[in-house]
Image (tube, rainbow over all chains, first blue to last red; front, side, top):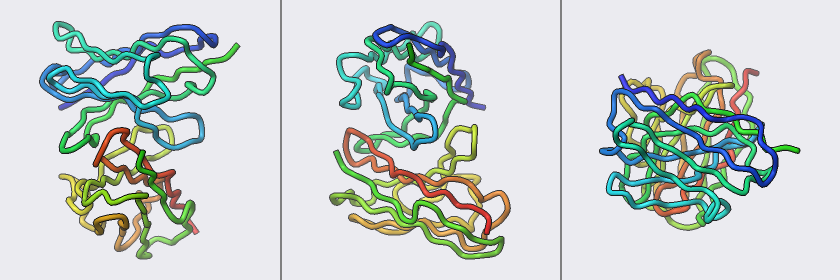
Length: 119
Length: 107
């Protein structure tokens, strides 16, 4: 059974940094394409970033240059390093396994971790 | 980016009803479209990929159709467990985009 467990969320001031983690079981992060998707309070889903099994990365325009997706193969864990955080980054962040054709859709999801950016 | 627009934003229906949700893309995406169901406080659940391919374990009352720019998700006979929010998502190109969601509520 695939399980994805996100941790690392919390309350952070604007301009601060936070690293989210997604620990996987039942799948090997390095052999899969993995992604982060977020959902602001009361709003819809927004794709954030994706890393291919080969290491190529993609980002949504508003997070380019501020967020970095990465993985630790030895820990079977996906990360999202978030710098220069803004109020509008407040959301529940989900990690998900991506199935890739041209771009990706998402078949396994974690339960999410909440990030609140506020002074 | 490709914009995805769902209609209606809210849909009121009764158990046993047949309902259809529409998703329109701002440019052609062929059949590179997925549908998700999300319940409050939970992660989304993948229902359909490639516009009409039902995921394993998803009840057959769910179906998807369409190609190009217009797509539909149909639930043939609503069950109590189906009242949730539904999202479409294009995966023709990066940035990946979702529709704004359709909330399906009990009439």
